[in-house]
Length: 272
Image 1 (tube, rainbow, N blue to C red):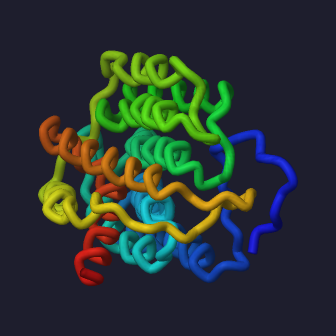
Image 2 (cartoon, rainbow, N blue to C red; image 1 turned 90 degrees about the vertical axis):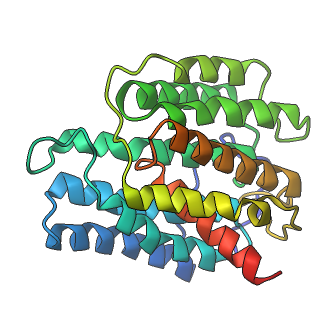
């Protein structure tokens, strides 16, 4: 168990791996194995690392969307790995260069956004956190995806509207949305048939994913129980992002998010 703190942590963003938990060890192994497996399949080292990061981010997103069930996060990893093997449309050169690593940014932007919304660390988003999310949104918009760039602002605004102990400061969501709406200077990774299928399948199970659920887990660094409503908000926001990604043909960088949503949706469908 994580030691209980006497005061709330200063930031809502850091959530380091704790290797005393088996699921965290498996997640780290997934990053390494995903990278090496992609390399063995012929990707360049930058492309392989992009695939490994996509595999890992699916697990991390899964832990935000389904905090009571580590198995769903682990189940998302092979789905994200398979989808992340597709080459971004920006990788016209062969092999992929270091610039392709920017295509991993949207999934980690999604992770940060959902973490602030679920308040899994046990802190409200500070002004510094909100600024960091705004910068992440701008970097995503300018390099690798307009849909992922909108998630920080949306998450902060939803968090603020909860009016609870973890509410984000007023106006920071609007500022982050403005940063994420910057005209894209770079070209996104585009779509692939497998990432499209993942998003469509996750949306097909959207009713199961979005249905209210009692959450038992507590925040990492406080005694507070995770909010059922906040976790549901995170799931709904994720489904909205996947739908917009399909419309804008940006499903490849959202594949880790889709894999996590699909895994949670399947778990809830089987438990009905």
